[in-house]
Amino acid sequence: MFKVRRALVSVSDKRNLIDFARGLADLGVEIVSTGGTCRQLQDAGINAIEISSRTGFPEIMDGRVKTLHPIVHGGLLGRRGTDEDVMQEHDIEPIDLLAVNLYPFEQTISREGATLDDAIENIDIGGPAMIRAASKNHDGVAVVVDPDDYDQVLETLRSGDMSIEYRRGLAAKAYAHTASYDTAITHYLSASLDQGLFNDRFLYSGGLSEELRYGENPHQVAAFYIDQAAAPGTLARAQQIQGKTLSYNNISDTDAALECVKQFAGPACVIVKHANPCGVAVAASIHDAYDKAFRTDPTSAFGGIIAVNQPLDAKTAAAIIERQFVEVIVAPEINGDALPIVAGKKNVRLLRTGKWTEDAGGGFDFNKVSGGLLVQSSDDGEISAGDLKVVTENKPSEQQIEDLLFAWKVAKYVKSNAIVFCRDGMTVGIGAGQMSRVYSTRIAAIKAGDQDLTLEGSVMASDAFFPFRDGIDSAAEHGISAIIQPGGSMRDDEVIQAANEHGLAMVFTSMRHFRH
Image (cartoon, rainbow, N blue to C red; front, side, top):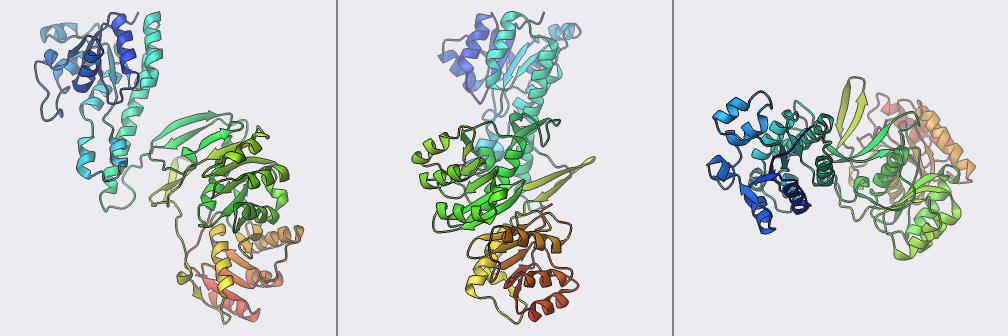
């Protein structure tokens, strides 16, 4: 039966510390500690022994060196039943339990004004060394890195049921703790150098938010992890106010809606279904933006995800709840008078993200492939009116330019091949995910026709260039007046000629937005 006679406790995160140490003391465990942890325990009336009294060596270099000593590491690494003679010869006492967590490196670098020197001083050395030593020797040592585990650890000790399997689980969690810590340091130091985005090894660390009921399909298992450095205003940091647990597909679609609506400065609404926007609009108010977005494609909006970029008010909440079945509503804030309205539909998931800031860039997108991982920087490319190159005889009007830029922002979030028809700050037809750009154009037109939305005078955005003139001919047939596209095709001259023949205005962005 595993028994703890001596514990070394040295923590930066002091949550639940006193209760845990008192529980150990009640079990007759001798507690050895360091620095601030030791003082806090002693102030609480707990008999804690300063580590330097055991090592015979004081803390030096402002605490940089205090646990890097054979007395400590011999006590953690000594194999029970094998190394007792060596331990006795060198007066090394076994340490049966290690409770350690690390200097707050991530909190330090997240503080405004934090310097490189601040970061360096908060890189823990002794802590990871002890954690790895104890984890390696988990046959004889229990290692605890998470204060949330203290109660369960005490319970297993009281019951005498701390099995080797349980200790191995603690060790695995401890190694994950140090791996995550090292990942944060790697990213920070790499970012401080001008050496590109990628190193020889790509490291990712995220904390488990929750295990999901299933993945895209019921036979798939799934979980949601939060990025180590997830920013405020992201889906990962959102607070769920009400509703059923989010599913895998809910999370994926809600993120698509949220990131799309963030592109707009004024009141905007995005409705997403199966990872594609089915309605997007800007207006003078959130209510009017929702109304316009819904009118794009009410059929697809059924069971969709709704994102707004202003506080959700009672009028908009009532319109949503009365008009359609919705899976998720996400907003930066929820007005108090909107809460009881949404609460009338208890299964609707209502999320509050808090205020978001402009993305500073540097994020990554992942795509798992067989035996590997594709990694790319996030698509944060933006275009302004000054970036547009007019390539046709007809020049777009100011209103057309406004609508073209709106359509371009929407196209960035539509699966390729993407075609987006817009007019007056509202999508009027969206064609997504087709193998042919011409078919995406036809689908967008069909959707507009089904809702009696006229395309005459509207504008069109294409996420990539037109390889042939047939896409331009098709657009003209539907009454499109102006087109925004990247350009860059071998047949650009032919495409421009087609636009001139139809009297269309067309601009090139020199940037594409493939979204597979």
